[in-house]
Image (cartoon, rainbow, N blue to C red; front, side, top):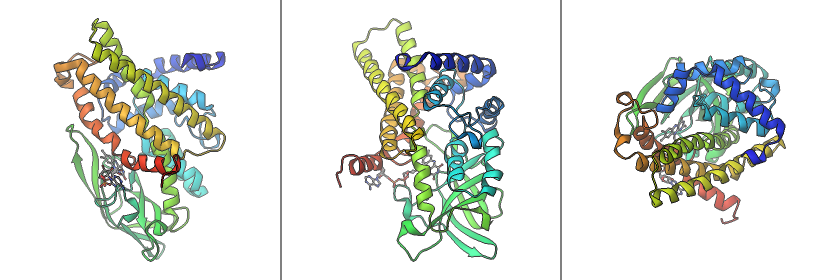
Length: 383
Ligand SMILES: Cc1cc2nc3c(=O)[nH]c(=O)nc-3n(C[C@H](O)[C@H](O)[C@H](O)COP(=O)(O)OP(=O)(O)OC[C@H]3O[C@@H](n4cnc5c(N)ncnc54)[C@H](O)[C@@H]3O)c2cc1C
């Protein structure tokens, strides 16, 4: 990317690199290198350290606490965080709920919920999917019924990531059954400590616990838990999903993993032509994705929210993550089987778990098949 940066941007990068190098605790960087599912405490710590610098939500507008960086500066910052093995901050509050609230929320909601997201004091989860409503989200069956001074919500949410340590859920529920499915949904804020919430952990293929099934059994929320207008939830939900998809490209983490893998491969002086060719292909795809993500960021500063481009980076970014983990398994061979706590080898640690868990990246945030249908319809005009 160096060729694209101005002198000021390079100076900015040096400053960021210097600060991250000073504030990132080494054990947190090591845990990030080795693991996939970080604890709330680990994510909150990094969030707090960034917040102290005014960088808690580097992509938010200045009026809500963002640092006012240009898209290129944001890109540089994210790339430097990944390069230093800084832990990811929690996606839900910072990337999904925050932008939804400052765009569609009331002044009171902004004042109440944005500051603790910014500081890492409160965590959120996303209650959209249900057992029979994933790709076909609009068919969801959780209902919210009006009661005096609020709503009563009943239903079951599936695959709720970080639900077991979230303080709040952003929940999509049906408020009108008499209209077409998309037109009868509303978006609510649910306090996860509310009576009527039961949570069952779901272990994923890697043996980790990051997702849950959440049962909502007559959960009462006040009137001011509604985000925006009644029955307009689908509009807000789509906005939120576009943010989720752009973020899910994970381009900087992929770059970091790829560079580590390449260093190991070349350090071992291996010459296997098949592997070398695969490294070259990933290098090319990764560079193309970096430029595409940068283009979307620049569009955003000109007032364009991500549309079909979000689907494109989601598909390419997730496929690349899987390609890199397959490459890692082939480069590491049987060393990839060593368990993280049994090996001193930081580069090999956790790769098998990562490789297994990575099945999810082409499923969550909207499956890749669905994204390809969106691209075909909106970008290629094939309907
Ligand atoms: C680890 C993990 C974490 C998640 N975290 C969250 C979360 O925090 N919050 C949340 O709300 N959701 C979450 N999800 C849910 C995720 O968004 C859904 O799994 C996803 O949208 C797919 O829905 P589904 O599982 O019901 O699969 P289905 O929709 O049943 O799809 C099954 C298969 O059929 C294909 N398919 C379905 N419809 C079509 C079609 N029209 N055309 C072509 N192919 C089609 C799909 O691509 C897929 O391959 C998570 C999922 C996973 C696995």
